[in-house]
Image (cartoon, rainbow, N blue to C red; front, side):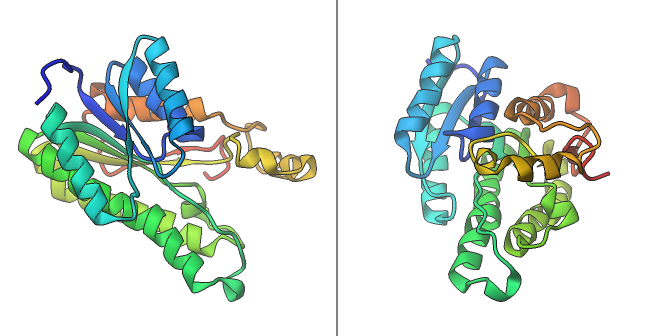
Length: 249
């Protein structure tokens, strides 16, 4: 184990941009040594790490494909050997391939489920092995309001994100006796690079459906993660926390 890093370890999948980048920066500010996971864009991931280190935090990069169980197991074992048991895991990596059910291609369905659902399961399983030995830990899944309410044209994405909720409730019951908590955050309409591609007309239509009348920021999701990662939420497990401005009540 590397004795130079005394901070608790937190890994955030898909944290090179958007919501994931905000989460990993918030956890670094909270005092964690953070692991910034990325699938392919090391340049963006390094930019996030630079910002964390400039702010006085500590972290490192770790590139792997969450949908590859062998890669997940290998990287998690390496991190445990280097830093000791992981304390916090945030499963944030995800994709969406939109389209009506009758036009849904098998490859797009398989890829969505592999990354959004199976990837989170692989990472949770790998982290749980470490957390069980340490008899402590917090796993936080980033699902989506779409997993709760559904949305036309997003059947595959909704299935994956809804499945993540059911998975988390089951695992929360399995791991509670070892003081490991598993919770879910369901973001609503959050302003990121992905949502920035929408037209003004589309954005206005979405805002009309949100009771608070505004979009969320990645930092809003990061704040919820910070709470569920810390001791103030020590008596909370198996729960779904909506960060959606009232979009789904």
